Length: 283
Image (cartoon, rainbow, N blue to C red; front, side, top):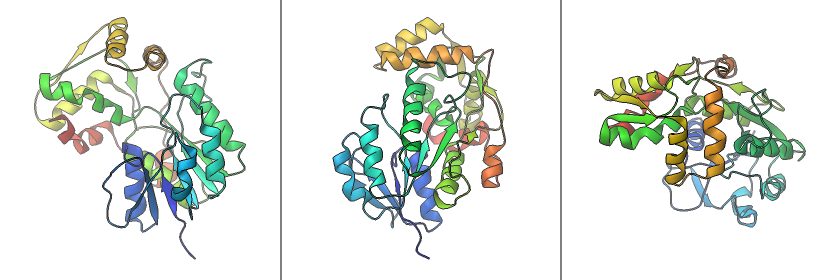
């Protein structure tokens, strides 16, 4: 039986890149959607296309059986056309959604939750086979601290006590590959988490251990952090959605489960493992 060809969007990002690597290592034909030049292992086909321009996707989707979809925008505008384009070629889409969708933490008007909710709705209505992965916070988001760790030896951020079950991109990729290459997760919306709640202050301490030099956490007020992020160019809508939602997690933390192990057979990687894996980014 011929193996399916899989198109990976977001292929130059942490999660999409890990999906490409895992599929390629397993001998599954994989194609990476790129907007510019990018390096991939020999045997991975890179094809130009842009999710912001559905008409550009035809070549990338030709001969594709399944798509791993990472939506790179803060609204669902244009998503319907992209899903229609996928549906003309592929039979399955695995969407990287969010743990906030469908949970009691979901709030009308919250930017990130809204577009993920709409993407899930569009995909479910498309007639495609589908899986919606709902991960908690990405461990890789802490790479936003890398420059100040390298230059100042400190992380200035709000919410030192905020504890989240951050998930390693390799674990998201492992679950995604199961959804792309088997029927085990058809029509499922698995909530996938890291193995434990870990505070931001402790995250910094583990990064310090991984790189072998002191790094301190300097807590700043939430309002100050919001203004700093806006000044740094982050969209106001995103900042005003994310940081207050994180503050609410102080008293209502995200759940922790063993879905990664149940689906893949391997326990979820710890943040300590993630920090060791990415130590070079912080040195």
